[in-house]
Amino acid sequence: MKYFSINRKSEPVTFRQAVLSGIAADGGLYLPETFPQVKDKFFAGIEYLSFNEIAMKVLQPYTADEIEPDELKNIIERAFNFDAPLVQLSNNLYVLELFHGPTLAFKDFGARFMAQVTSYFLKDNNKQITILVATSGDTGSAVANGFYDVPGTEVILLYPSGKVSVIQEKQLTTFDKNITALEVEGNFDDCQRLVKEAFADEELKKRIHLSSANSINIARLLPQSVYYFYAYAQLSELITTRKEKKLPVVFSVPCGNLGNLTGGLMAYRMGLPVKRFIAGVNSNTVFSEYLKTGKFNPVPAIKTISNAMDVGSPSNFARIKEIFNNDYELIKKIIFSRSFTDEETLDAVKSVNKKFGYIIDPHGAVGYLALNEYLSAEKSEQCSGIVLETAHPAKFIDVIKNTVGEEIIIPERLRACLQKEKRSIKISSDFKSLKEFLINRG
Ligand SMILES: *Cc1c(COP(=O)(O)O)cnc(C)c1O
Image (cartoon, rainbow, N blue to C red; front, side):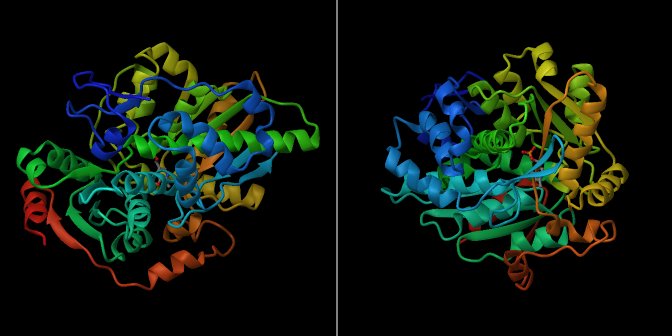
């Protein structure tokens, strides 16, 4: 499989090149040249497959000519050593829990797969690679965790000072060894811009082998297709066991940089039967506005309580357009989007807890709200609604603890990290500070 730059000014590359460079020389994002079609046979028995078996089937065509099946199996087993259970809240309403990885957010899937693939591609050469990651909260810790102590790699995290939760900050700043956290005096968009500027800088390019692990890296996106298939498998199992009628499936995705949604759309293009994708957004409404007006107007990010979605200029937007051949009507047909305020989000956390006895985090709550909007807008047909729960609620305990009527249990892996000491280096949002840091460090 070859990967092409969506700007089409660079040549298509191998999977290895796409992963190690992150972004094409022409500044474009990579996409696979085709979406391999899954067979009907695969769906016929999908309810009997484990997550890793599904991952193998979905991912192998993307890597086939470069990674032997046995090697891919090892990569998958090391990357996905945790589950993604589908939890039923009520008739036709489900939550796909994507927070069972080490850093308690869905980004563990992409980050851990990318780390394993990178280390596989680097294992026979002595190159040192420096991975720059701009993070609005959860990416950084997932990437750091995935790459922690991986030989030949160094990770530099850039996060916006004062704009991530106390717990997220602890998760970003308590690594040692090959991980460094830079605390940027600015917002998330500044962090993203700094990373982009670093990639465009000729002098840095000569001195350091830079790579990216943001959701722009294709190795982050591919595994995010897998859990859509796995959710479908679990749903099929429930429905078969109960001898219920199969309904059309809709996925509701809480969106920021649109990487999670793009993973779903790729699964759809591979043949996963999905009726509609729902993109829930917070007060950062650039995508919901695009679906309403056809105009894409990036603006500075606004701070909200679902802060991993505080993105004013979502980087995967260009990929979504490409996946649908720039056909706006088609995009509107398959994706439904609505935005919600913090107040509505907290109300949803409360009502989900009251109605279903389930504690949902603020990001998942936005997905829940968007699904409800969709269901009331499209009264016509019944469907199975799956909300992607992207983070464990304990990550946002400071925001929701007074909203839910029960104690939020902090998982042990988070508790351990909270006891460690914060270590970060402050830099300004000016590119000069980042460049100086990169050149002068050890
Ligand atoms: C990153 C993140 C999101 C947004 O995902 P995108 O792929 O950037 O759209 C939603 N929820 C949580 C908890 C996240 O960490």
